[in-house]
Image 1: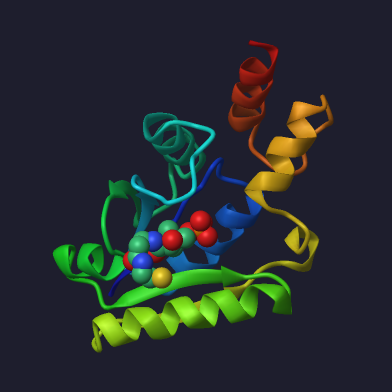
Image 2: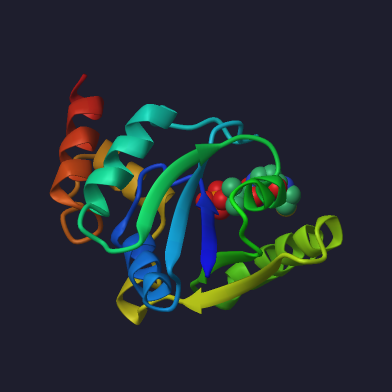
Length: 158
Ligand code: PNS
């Protein structure tokens, strides 16, 4: 079974990698899909986000990294998948995630969304928190891979 894990991954965190690892256990192919035309303006370019994700998932069996534009359900159809994976942290994620899942089902009845709960140690973690900590020179080594931490440092020094 092929599943799609869509997101901004701006940048990928250990929280995302936890979801990827858990989802890859029960999928044959997990496509980690980076949205290129988000309404949100991104901090890292699509190429940088793809690079960081590819490096971070290197060696994970069945995990591939792709970019997409447009609707997630159209991307799912284009790769022959009818399963979207999303991670859930606290209950605050639930409302928007549930709305997204129902919207996607409205758009494509054959596509379902499954939620994977994050490890408790990553409950607080988000890409925006990581960017903010890095901006003020804080230590993000428990939140992102060394490669991502290095890119953040470089960006903020520049
Ligand atoms: O990491 P994010 O920013 O929470 O990911 C959000 C994402 C990319 C999954 C969501 O914005 C999305 O699916 N965008 C594509 C446009 C789309 O399909 N919209 C309809 C569903 S709400």
